[in-house]
Length: 318
Image (cartoon, rainbow, N blue to C red; front, side):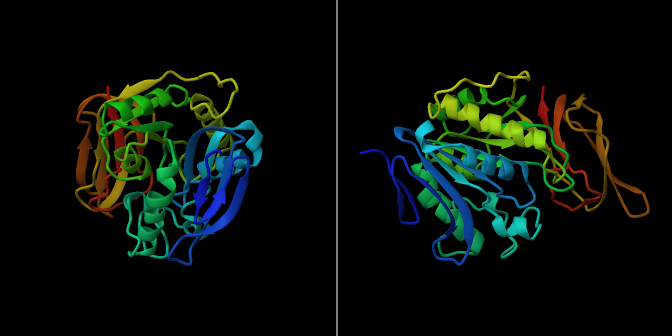
């Protein structure tokens, strides 16, 4: 008897497809899920998109891939979470769950008795992620966030998990591969539980460019081939791959108006001006300079900077 995938008590057996608006246990919250359990045994791939409601390319790519795949094609199973923060997307709320103001990417492993956001994450961490052999979380730059394609793989969960995750980066056509020591987010939490995975970033400024959707579809295809779920050819790489062991995240130490001096994909040198925070009259409050040579992955593109905001500029050390 083949593997069965359990979604809130619904058993998806080998050769079956399940697609529903699923009611998260202990809540009135529904989120769209597709499970394709292949006709042949193999690994289970978990793919989530839309944890942040203003990040669109991954959501569009998941819908496209879920519609194209059949159970007959697969050796193993795919669990697609089309849009985790479904209410945030519908209400055009960029980064948080509108019902409780929670950033779902910071709530792992959640709390089954906590806020709505914590209950959603507890469901993912307690029921869905443990069924996976590999985890992929699709992100993009939200509103006012220019971003160049990059990915994160877990570097703090032991050498075996790192090796498995880093091997998968070689089939994803994204140039910048960031070794991450983060402890939050679904892929980081899964890694701490012995499940390798990746966080992918494509598209920026809250837009949904068709070319980035198509690139995400190719990424998903290649990962499925890499994991043995599809017996097809890999799409060839179009970009050179570069691994970054250290990434710096510039935080605002005062509030004001942010004027970046860099752009995405820019190579910078130690001491280069990254940007300035000014007051409403244009008086400089703080200047920020690069701590080392690097490549700019993304930066805040809006005018307002709030004290403590940690993503004014993200750049990897070279």
